[in-house]
Amino acid sequence: MSGLPERIARLKQRIDRACGRADRDPSTVELLPVSKFQPAEALREALALGFRRFGENYVQEGITKAAACPGAEFVLIGPLQRNKAKAALDHFTEILTLDRPELAHRLRHVLGEATGVHPVWIQVDLWGEATKMGGCSAEDLPAVVEALQGDPRLPLQGFMSIPPPDHLQAFPQLGELRARWQDRLGTSLRLSMGMSGDLEAAVEAGSDQVRIGSDFFGLR
Ligand SMILES: *Cc1c(COP(=O)(O)O)cnc(C)c1O
Image 1 (cartoon, rainbow, N blue to C red):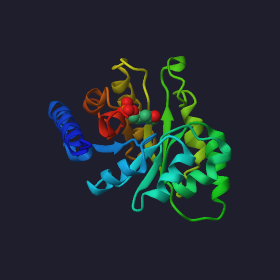
Image 2: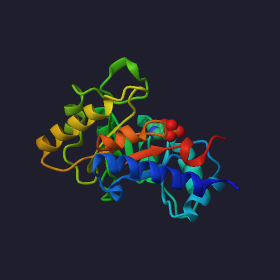
Image 3: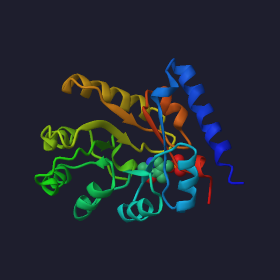
Image 4: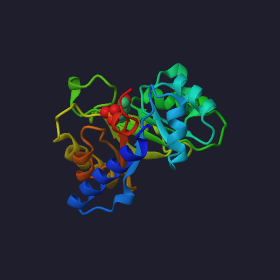
């Protein structure tokens, strides 16, 4: 009686329709469930429906859930402190919230001689004080990219962002940022943008991954 299959069907329909308006292939948009504060049981139900990757905001919560949900993998979507860098690399398959050069240095340092690959996304905040959720400014972005030093163990996937609510112009701005950096780096980059309330505008502006918490798991 959780209603999870119905909520997923509704989300897929919303993504399909947004893709239809933007002339995009819906299979190119990842629906990433955000499982923060959800019990392990809810994740296991999603796993049974074919979802394997989950977004978590806190390193410790991800570690606890990983132990309780065999077969699940976690990507970090919350701010990462330097002292949690090792734990994050050990327990998360991707880090979406790289937002300062020191953190990139720290990730490279704790990797040491290790050879495993940990894809990273840079979190950007193009709107300054409007959001206090982390993220680097467009001016600081080159230093963050530079700090990765092209390390093949930390391949840059693209940009993640949490624009201020109701600022729908944000999504096209992020699309332009992505285009500029694709030209600059000569690689293709993905965009992780759009949440429960604004996924349509994000998809229409080119989002490759929508991160959905409340409309996926329901309100607790
Ligand atoms: C909680 C959270 C989400 C999901 O938000 P909803 O509005 O519940 O869909 C997405 N991204 C980040 C970074 C979050 O912290």
